[in-house]
Length: 363
Image (cartoon, rainbow, N blue to C red; front, side):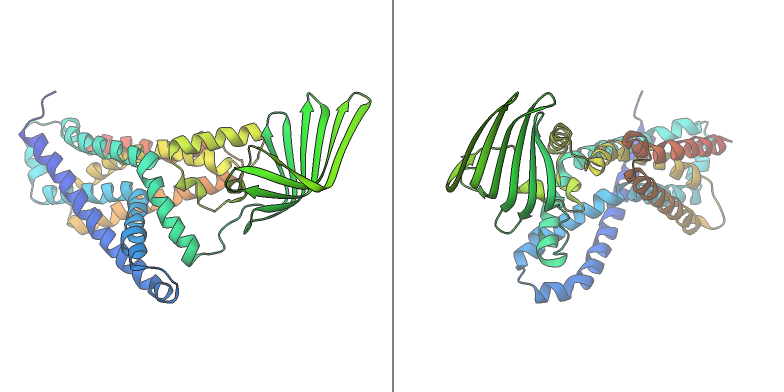
């Protein structure tokens, strides 16, 4: 298929309007966020470098990732409504260009933005979230860590389970530490320690006041010490006791998949939000294509309200989409929906609406 002068004209208009919309909304968002947090920045020992080179660049990445589809919808409606208001759309259709053919450059530009958003969502945005959350949890919301510290049960290997009565995060120490090793359903080794401390330099756990029991059928061997210690390597680190509300957003997709696999191997039950995040990263970029179809179908018709009416309708559609996506996500967190279905339901519903809108616009 050829990419003619008209296609290039619409393609450039689309991307230029998108970038303009992106910059304007980012500028407004930064001003609002700065005005809300200026008191915190003055009171906390945060440096200018952290504010200017870490927090706000990461904040802009966060806003871009969250509202990228909405920016696309606004851009499409804005410049398409201007084309319709200047009777350019009417001239194209009168010249014999089918409406479906008119959609081609829009879909090319939307496809490029979809690809950028997909790559960014898997690799770039998580990197920005790491820096944004570091500043947020250090200076702004200091009590966001929801990691469990009492009565912790973890599988660190298929047949090895760890129990910790109490874990202290500031110095990475634990009390009432227990390691259970099984063969099938049979307990073969039990290691108990009153105290355990994570050794940063070696990555091992130092156990004191310990006792070790080995079970072989009805036979049992016993070893204990109240004065010596043992260092043992476990598939367990202080990071396993940290669970921020947005921790899944700070992992690149390879890290996210490794974490999900590790938690499933351990038998952990707190991976729902991580599987939802993985599926969201794959589903959300395709929203750009869907909202582009809706935007073109709405704005291609010349109406009395002009750009203002089209933008109001477009922003309303975008807001409904975002609210509906959040509702489905919250609903899915209760294990009422499979993660894959929860991520794609908004797209399936709005794709149906988009196809209906395109069909009506052709008439």
